[in-house]
Length: 422
DNA sequence: TCTGGGGTCCTAGGACCC
DNA sequence: TCTGGGGTCCTAGGACCC
Image (cartoon, rainbow, N blue to C red; front, side, top):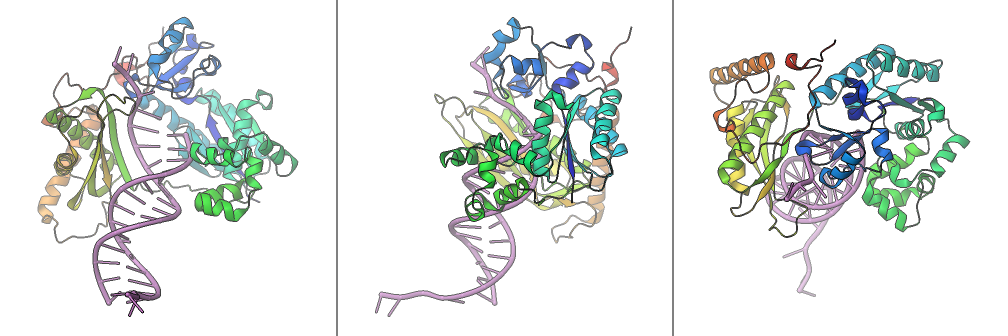
């Protein structure tokens, strides 16, 4: 019988911010998205104030001030670093770990003699060594482990670890879980299910399989089976290579000028090409998307998207910038106020063992491009991202530049920003 | 004034081929 | 009047996740 554990950090980003600011203990903390746009993480005190996930920050400024909420811009280098410390700790203690997201990991504890004791030990050690509280749910399937984790979080009586055994206990939990809170059932399906009188996870499990298959595809069927204790999703230890990579940003202010859009798209192309090389991959095509604001009906709307195929798979930044700018020309319409742009790389293949194309450059030229990119990456790794830049991306004071007024120091990843003691 | 960023998978429909 | 069957590949759109 398989046994999965889901380890999930409590209020992860908020907990990270508090780690280096002990005076914030007991105070409400929120972390904002890029551009300080909306709330993407809340401490339990902030949740208690009724601040919802995704709340636009400007609507809550008064409450922030009134209740003394500590507000942070997002600081992903910090969260990423703390995340990898946690994952390393898990790898040391559990037989088999799948890193599922920045703040979650599945463990396969099949055959472990006392899985609950192990989970308590893990929780203890992560808290002591890294300083981040986690909750752990145990069950026969990943979907049920997710559910068990919710119980561990919501009911402090269990001490952060909840074991969801089959039978009565599982059914009791399913009966009090809103179907929309099940992993894999999003707002759309949830609404349709409610309309049919399916309110709880237990109602959902009892639906005819054929209906679920027809209306919710095999994905929905898999969720239903997992809720009934049949494991459909195994643990995947090695992360699958990416099929696409994206860099997209909302601008600090609206952008109308083609030249500014070209700068923004170029700088996102640079960034996404860096990610591509860090994966040891090459891309076959480049897609650009641009859009006007979603939430303002009084402005003319446009969203465009275009894809340009590269002559051959490459990770060469100038080639990718060039393709991205051509894609931009295809989808740009003058006269609109754009709010967001993104560059996506598609058709990723490993750089080693690549398909040879008739359109390939001669090997010598490829070698030169590769050497240049490696040198560039090495300098930027050593001296910080953006030390060596492309001219088109460097203009100061552009409307597309991000606003980030409240970022905390990069305590653990930047020498200039180490915490001071004493 | 002010609403994130980065992914995956499934399905249907069209193009194209034999 | 009446226009096959089967396969592949690609794309767009929808749905979900954190």
